[in-house]
Image (cartoon, rainbow, N blue to C red; front, side):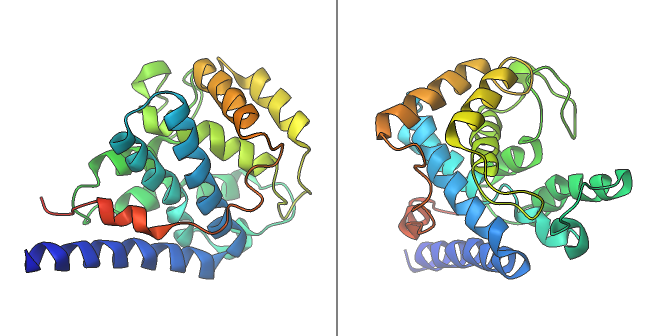
Length: 217
């Protein structure tokens, strides 16, 4: 029992350390990750996904950009369009993130979400060009809410877009970039919580959800 408790504490400490490093690298990315985690959990539950799996998706969303710790700051914070070389460096973040979690127990599903959250429904994404249901469900959930929060948040290269514009762009991307069913479910979730900008006050994450993971192989 003592060993299990110690393992839990080590697991929570590892995840929190990774997020702390991400915040130190880029505060905007750290805050974005927390908001995406909360939105991903809400969308997962809206889809009828079991609570245990929704918690895994929440963790995958929290860690989806942790690989950006390995991206040069001049690329991560560049206020202009990235060059082809810089884009290649940025895209490496999915590999960096997956590798950062390689030694953490019980993270196989989460690692897959981190690696594949930039895949496109039509196969046009990266890194593996997966399409449709070849893409892990958690990665598909993260892809939709990641895009929504990115569009409705300030970025180095632009100010936030209105909720209505983000919704229209998601609608346009349904069936090409995004799982069309999940796009529709996200709209229902946003309507259900009754706030056009539901993530504005979502930067405070309840870390207790990590205690539900028992990192004992």
